[in-house]
Length: 226
Picture 1 (tube, rainbow, N blue to C red):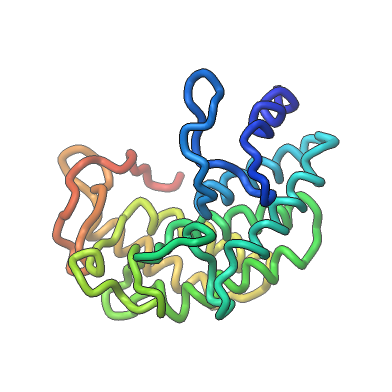
Picture 2 (cartoon, rainbow, N blue to C red; picture 1 turned 30 degrees about the vertical axis):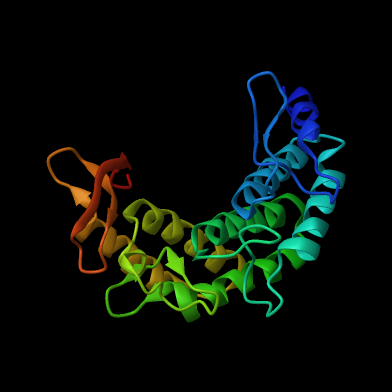
């Protein structure tokens, strides 16, 4: 099942070694943009393919990391660009999924190089993403990783708080940085307190940093652990 999937994905490689954003239903290229979010998903898939013994996954992963470093890495070494020539707002969400992919590659290989990659995302989280006053994570930022000046600067997603909390605990276990569990608890508490629609059990799509619903569509059903 994995090998045909990777063979299909490989039809979406770009000349610079990256991966396209989307296919049409007939397999032709719909959007050739090389997006950081999509590359995080490719890396996550390849890590698990490598864990399962796929003979091509490690090579494809190494090529994807080379593209990430050569074309998406911010010149200031503060995270990654949305696309190689991207402009406009920066987002925390692709970085969350890159953190997830880096942790998966550490699990697949045991190579601490991937933990060092993950640590750079953790530094961004501590320094820019996490808001200590509201216990929230911002979604949109300017090029200097300051909160976006318009209404996007208030946008937080409870579902992402749950995801970040899980990844912070995972990184804490792997790295020994025990202080990260405090951040995880704060994010979890914030999402439960302000991010849930009590009548449906769903997390809101987005709430403000003050906990006011901005997008009332259910993000995904929340279940208490255990």
